[in-house]
Length: 157
Picture 1 (cartoon, rainbow, N blue to C red):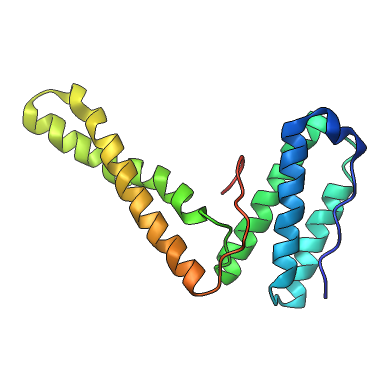
Picture 2: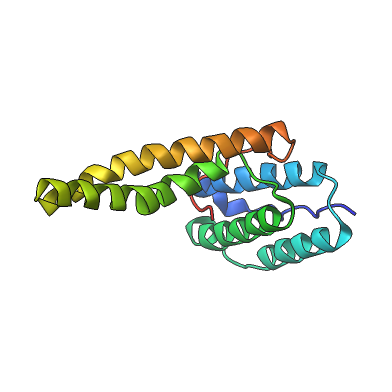
């Protein structure tokens, strides 16, 4: 079973950012189509594309539903099959590293120095840890053949 095509939109030429997101989404769908996915998953993805094709708006107001469907499909593939786009885990763990590692490190450092204003010192440390963890997971996904050859920007997870 194949993934259906995304309907062409004429008004996207007026907004270069929307046009870029649209082109990236089409590439994303093409990459997904090359993976051997079960028919049930392909039906679910096709349903989301049909919902997107039914959206009457175009241009700048089309970006929001496009990014929302992109996020839903990405989450479906990641949770069900661990198939992810390039730098998915890096971008996810960048934020997680800041909150999970950075804030506690900064709090400990600030408490040890007696100045809680130093709390923010832990954020870049946590960010670096998160990027390292996420990049390692991305490399593993690439090595296992679970990475799509497209990088999604502007609305992931």
